[in-house]
Length: 222
Image (cartoon, rainbow, N blue to C red; front, side, top):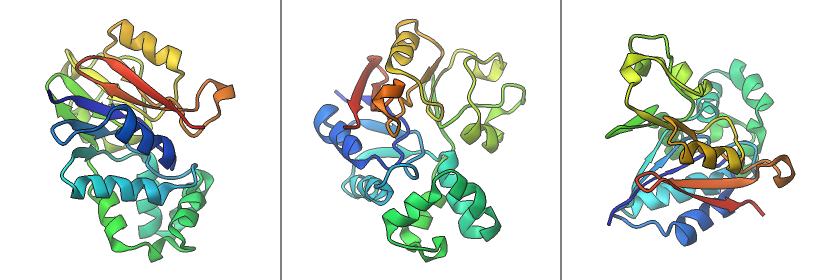
């Protein structure tokens, strides 16, 4: 039976990402996997994360990677060096180190094309997948790309979003909080469990959500 799965912010944490996909959820080609953005920065293996995503797609796995604010900052820096300061303030230098380059404009085109082609959100049935969230006050909340990668809300009142369950990343939450949202059948479920942050802070897990069964699969970033 095919599954609908989502994985939160990876941030260069390749080892737990590989463990989660290959050994924990044991991804199959008839599954659908939505990745919620922020594949790069902070952790030290951004290139390995992106290469793994590209390899899975080449092998025919049904993967939809969405964009996050960190991919957006990378692209802005690629197009305009003035934007490098903001990206570096958000750990962009770890991504350059991972790719073995000193200048973002030296990044291979295959990666720039990957980042440029990422979608901002995905709609499947009554589920909406997004990195951050939506503009609750816009008549068309799907037109505000800034909100989709930078803003998150605990609830929505926009009539366009009524009856939808929004699954997002961007703001790290503890496993306890995420499980509470799931058990209460919340219409907003955050699944960024702070893989790149320490266990002592209550984070330190990369998590996948089996959306149809509402089962959370966390893997510690040891």
